[in-house]
Amino acid sequence: MPGGLLAMKGLVALQFALSIPVAYWLARRTLPTGAALGVALLSLTNPYLIEFSHHIMSEIPYLLFSLAALLAVDRALRTGRLRPAIVSAILVASAILIKPVGLALGAGLILALRLQGQRRAAIAVGSGCLAAVLLTAALGGPFALTSSARSDELDIHNPEFQSYVSRIFERDAYQQVTERASLGDLAGRAARNLWGYVSTNLPLVLMPFPALLFEQVWTSPSGRLILILLTLCGLSLGLARSLRLHRPEAWYLVVYLAGLLLWPSRGVDLGPGRRYLVPLLPIMLIFLINGLQRLLRLIGGTSHRLQPIGTAVLVAAMSLLYLFTARDITRGERHYPPSWSGYYEAAAWLKRHAPPDAVILARKPFDLYLEAERRTAYYPYSPDPGDLVRAIERYQAAYVVIDSLGRQETPRYLVPAINANKERFAIAFASSIEPRTYVLRTMDRSGVRRR
Image 1 (spheres, rainbow, N blue to C red):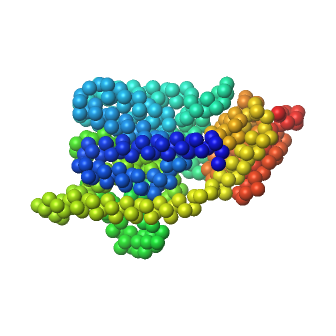
Image 2: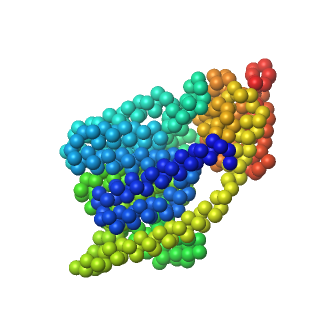
Image 3: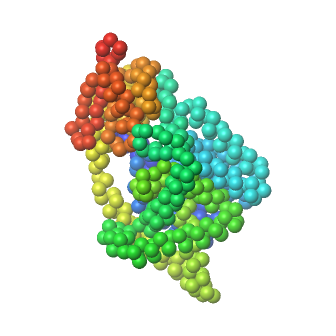
């Protein structure tokens, strides 16, 4: 594995490890010690958190900063002091810079603070959100600081940041033909997403079963119904109690999930839908354990032993299921998927053959930079083929990478732009792995290749 990739994976794993004690201390604000330890254990063993704990993606860094922000706001509410709110504002701003959905975190915290009469703290958090939005827009999007560091004088512009809002109002964000969504389209999307999350994604991330039992439980109507009801009852009971207390994590969860209902999806959108829930998992586990404890209290009546014993048995059983599921999920991850193997093969070729000062346009420039050790930038997310040529001229880009990573931007924007300007490109490299990744060498107007 390349040294840069290994270092980044180690950093993500460290952030995941740090998020576990933060999740415990956040859980202690509403749960007894034993139940809070159960939340920490379930967060540590949840297969989806384990899966993302070594991926060079924004979910785990965002998770750490969002949990820390919630903990700081809780301290501001308990002490009435402004300093913890300022710390939270800095953490929220950092979360927004990592992932734009951090705006949901800021909105949830501001709402909770206002409902509890903490006006100054709410203004502090709001100021942090505003500063992050302005800084993100000025720098060109999430991870812009990292992008600038790797590209020297290049004015890196991340088109993903601008596309987040525009995608919500597109009728079908996964097709090349862009049409604006009507109110009816948005209402229908919200209804489909609500059913997808309630019937599939939420139960699967909170109550996953190992492959050995999956078919028997999930394909059985009664088993699936029990799983859905158990998840929804536990979450709803815990969330309702926290909303009555105006807990910041409760309002954050509500705002975040409301945003997910409007996000474009492919049908039930199982894979991406579960990814969107990863940063919420420790918080949802807090509410789930809280709600299931209340159910045990209702079942046990005046018995004081049933609740802690039942909670311990429940956490132990869920942890075992989590670990077996994590084993099944990670068993196939000892090697990169073919699409990523081809991408890194292309990056290795660029490292060997591209000049040290070469600029490369790609869909995943940061990952490419870690292996190729060349300056990288995003290609423009634009339906106008001329924008790609202008980006090449602006950056004096010598190469363009056509990936097969499965993201819609490459077939939607890059491939049509290249087809419209075929005389400006020549294939320099094709990966040996299917699906293929291509490295194209760019030509100037006179047909001379760039160096």
